[in-house]
Amino acid sequence: RDGQTLASGSSDETIKLWNRETGTEIVTLQGHIDNVDSVSFSSDGQTLASGSSDETIKLWNLDLNLDSLMARSCDSVRNYLQHNPNVRESDKHLCDNLKK
Image (cartoon, rainbow, N blue to C red):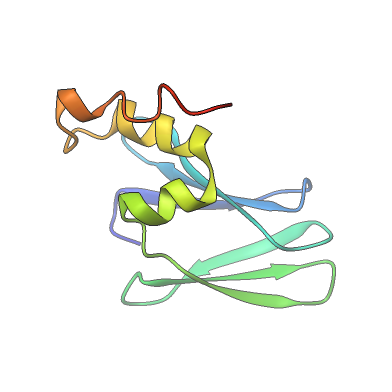
């Protein structure tokens, strides 16, 4: 995608985006109902295509700003905040008071 983000498909029906440098998970995408067999980034890195054994192809908008991460999963946000070097130290605890 941007040289720093990797995507993986899994038998648990999810797609995970990973920080290549740190090996940490950025976000988990859910939507397939069977194994995710293939993933591919668009040339501009803004879209991810996934193919599944459920015989569907899905297109994912990869607008990975902080607001969209919060909407997807507080756990992913916590991980993002703790491991993203561009986040201010004072912001790394924004999700600490949210329910798990």
